[in-house]
Amino acid sequence: MIKRYIVPVIALLFVVLIGVGLVGFNLFRDKAIKDFFATMQQPAAPVSTYTVKPSSWTPEVEAIGTVSAIQGVELSVEVAGIVKEIPFTANQVIELGAPLLQLDDAIEKADIVAAQAQNVLMDQTLERARTLNTRGVGAVSSVDEAQSASLAKKAEIAKLQAVMEQKLLKAPFKGTVGIPRIELGQYLAPGTVVVSLQDLTTMRVDFTVPEQNLSQIKIGQPIKLGLTDDDTSFKGEITAIEPRIDPATRLVSVRAKVDNSEGKLRPGQFAQVRVTLPKEDDIYTLPQTALVSSLYGDYIYVVRPAEDKADAPKPAGGQATGAATAADAAKPADAAAEKKLVVAQVFVTPGRRSGLLVEVTKGVKDGDIVVTAGQNRLSPGAAVKIANDVNPAKTTDAGLAKK
Image (tube, rainbow, N blue to C red):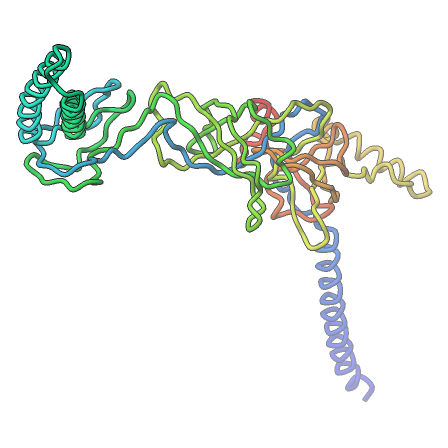
């Protein structure tokens, strides 16, 4: 009878043990997974860095300007007429006084010839009147009338010659002509534009700066000019500063002169202008890519060595200490020498900006290693590794030194 109940009891105990084992295994597995993710080390993120150090800095005031020729006009005719001759070609360099357009002046030439013939007669009449007056047989009034007629005719000849000269358009200065806007045989009304004449040897650039920078701008101050932000190879100097500030924009108009002996600049071009300010020493600067703006202020990420857990207080008991020492001794020398790096969030106070650099007046010190690229993957305390061989921002120490 007793044997009849032993087998079911044993089977029940076996089932209970299996159930308890499964529950225990699940609890152990869940705890192991939680512990694994709690202590799991995130892979170090590669970042580009820049080492902070005080340096000499030449700040610049950046502006956008428009290039124009030092001398440039749209030449037009003063009188009406038919185009007879166009003695120039497009993009030709011409000298001062060179002819550019000849209108039909046949009528004016004929009028001048007729007026000169009449002028000879008037001179003869005047001479005869003076002779008769000298002999006492001529009135003084006859001499005056003849002299007045002679002077009037000479004035008429001068007027005809002036009108005929207006039919010939000449270059007012040496420069380069543009594309002709007229054709042979075309009738031109007064004021019709014939061609553009530009002196391209020297250019000027007009730009504006904020009124806060007015005290830093001086006549004769050097500037750098370029057609792109990366290439400012043209040099010049400020020649004029508008004494009045525009009340609508609070901007000041400035004009500078730039040498263009190579002819690379053209009137009407957009230009990037940088006004060079006096050099300053012992200034802390950072690449602008290192600065991150937020609602709480501007901050940077600074790379620092991670705290070594081996330096933490060790548990009591010689066996544990001995085991740890033996494990440390078994580590490769390279792994022991390699330091783990983490980033710390540091709020800073930025100042002036110039090119790729921004001045930092508070928050950094000499020797800080600042992250310049890769901040979007970081958070305070994140592990990083320095990888300056790949630097998308191009803000390495050597690269910024060239700037």
